[in-house]
Length: 293
Image (cartoon, rainbow, N blue to C red; front, side):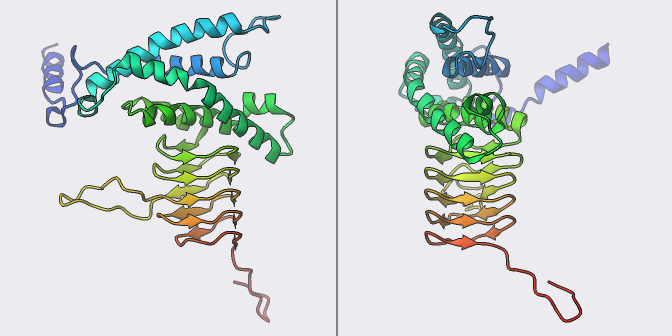
């Protein structure tokens, strides 16, 4: 038992004090389980009868939505407060309290729902296997990822610390779709299949953009400061309106894919292309002996 006690003391003493993030009564950490509950409540609020417990014959969700929003306010206010307390480098500069931020976010829910409705339509319209909007909401990982992203993006714009990253990483773990909450994504966004999609923090994506599985919108390199640490500057692609990017394409750096372009599968793209471009792999060349490249 002395060994266990000694080891426990060593672990507590070596709690990364130099990084200044140790939780304490004055600096409580957000709770991931509470954030999961927040996401479940938000799904049931944004899509009543699709998420949460629904009894047979219960298709008048007004009272339940109101009750869920009351619970949402309490939980979200608590978690925002903890985030502001623990990550004090941002809290020190923040000009709004947790209740103010919570209220401001709740007021954004109608617009978040409108944006998600455009995503549902885009996914349904682009997939002949989809039988309707209901199936897309229930079953498609892209919608799960976009619910998390659009909620997290609004919180990040309000400078709420850490919660947005937790929310999008929950979706990443569940769907294999990795969208940073800092990315800017327009209306009618769709992802087909979705596994392995990566969208970086400073991406700007226009309206009516469609991605397939395995697409990476990433950084080509990093700008470093005098200490050799990466600087947070725009480093991910700009994808203009009405672009389709097929499976396993990799687009890197602060380049622009012009509107109405198509990027074929397995393309490695590090240079901007103008509108209406068609970027595809070169066709195989056959030689007299039948071998090709």
